Length: 201
Image 1 (cartoon, rainbow, N blue to C red):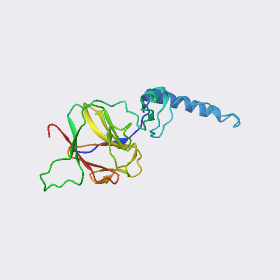
Image 2: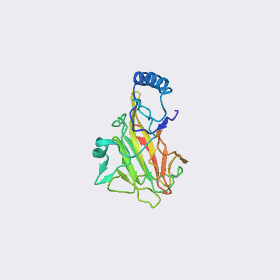
Image 3: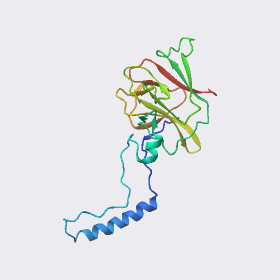
Image 4: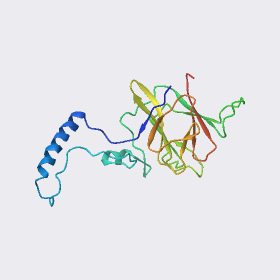
């Protein structure tokens, strides 16, 4: 199964018709401005500017919803966020998984009660606290997103200092990576390994 990934962007995109109309308007505006003095500032465009991915809250709604216990949350929930429709679980092992051993996980974390789970070492805001000196206070997020007719789990690194690793490969920050069953997740230099499975596995 191919793994889907895309850039995190909390801004809304405009419709194609608005973009087309705005483009024609700017074209007319540019043709007129050539005959004018350059001492006047250009007329503002009504086309929304492309904004780079940002974890900073924007607007009153974000200010109200992106705060826990007086701490600003770096992550903004995307519009396609949904509750999971499968009983996903993280199986946590304190050290690397030994496939030759019959030993079970040290902990099972259920991922079926929220649309997203914030991971980091700040217990006042994180849903899944991970206590290791190399892990950032708000390190990463597991987000359930609607893709077509399915609700799928994704992993995103929140620009952490020491990175997030998916199946041994460091992922790019500010980008969603689709999680597949039996994926391995590690955070920074912590030896703990998390294996993703669901109840029907």
